[in-house]
Image 1 (cartoon, helix red, strand yellow):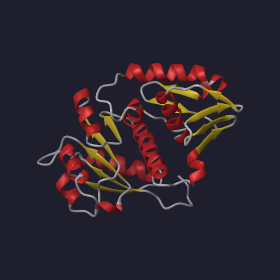
Image 2 (cartoon, one colour; image 1 turned 90 degrees about the horizontal axis):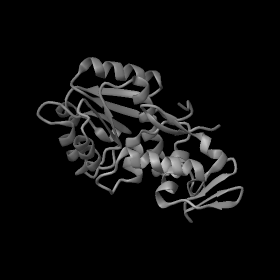
Image 3 (cartoon, one colour; image 1 turned 90 degrees about the vertical axis):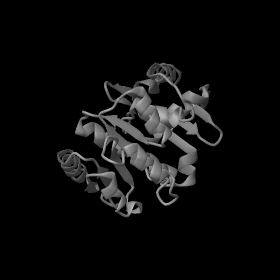
Image 4 (cartoon, one colour; image 1 turned 60 degrees about the vertical axis):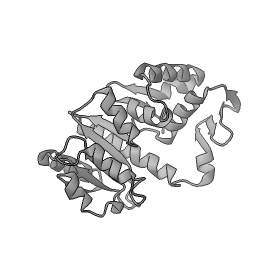
Length: 236
């Protein structure tokens, strides 16, 4: 993390105390400030507006993670608080429920700590961009070497030559460039690019990535696959 910026504060809510401690230790090692709560009830007693991200277990006692998320989304003070669900339930219906509640990501247990850290950084990076973390000119123009995206005119160019991209291809490339060098899971891409569509297969994402790689020529190699994790646009 950038030592010149205030560290993001994260709240981990999970009834597995050992898991809370592991996540807290590793996220703090990455430079985040981390608090924990062992139930939704305990978490709701806190001032949640202090946090930039919530890691929220789905399966808890009286108030489940889904129910807590619904409560947060209905309160204007916490409606936009980024949420990553942690769950042992990995069925498609559960995942869609999470995204329909406005989840920013959905991680199935068991998971690797590196995976969680990568997802956390990706969500926080997206949130910073959406909240104006970069100036207007930067947001309107995303570039990597001679590859350029004009996000206002919805136009992609390489060496000043326009590249004909579909709406989904453009949005995927925009998302990857905004999160350069961070791995985005299929769920990340699904929630951002297909957010208003009820049912999308992973295969649909893969097909769009394949087409996108071909269209952007020499930069296709920068879109790398991290097996079991997702996709990343790599480049200094």
